[in-house]
Picture: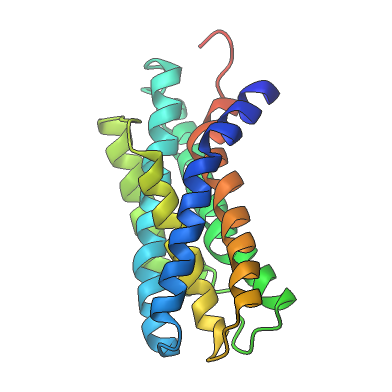
Length: 203
């Protein structure tokens, strides 16, 4: 399992670096937009990220369980894995790691913005929808690059909400580092590592 995790992290590093560069380009373009606009964009991207994570995590688990999730107990297990794998990890990626960055950078409008609490019905509903659709039609061949760009953009607009008007070259570099960390480990964990933890050799 450890070797597989290291392999996946290495393979997905180029996508994540490219995604973080894309994030800095967006940062330069959208720097200075109002808090309300960046809030709205974040709460468009973050729920979509939760949906995609729920779908991918649930699909991965269901396909590896090879049909054993058809019982009520099996479905409940699948649901909990899909729910936790999407909400917890997407929250870490899109909200908590950017929030730590905002604190360390001493950004003026910093805030945690926990989606499944702050916009309860929207974020949780999309998580449930992703789980149900994956249960009915599991599919894992979703381009990881798409997931990376989506997660990067959500993390970025979380930071833009806190940014205010000041932006320097050094700050761009520091935000690049936080975007990379916010996406690299959580995305691989959500899509691959987390669901496979619950699959035994007998499955």
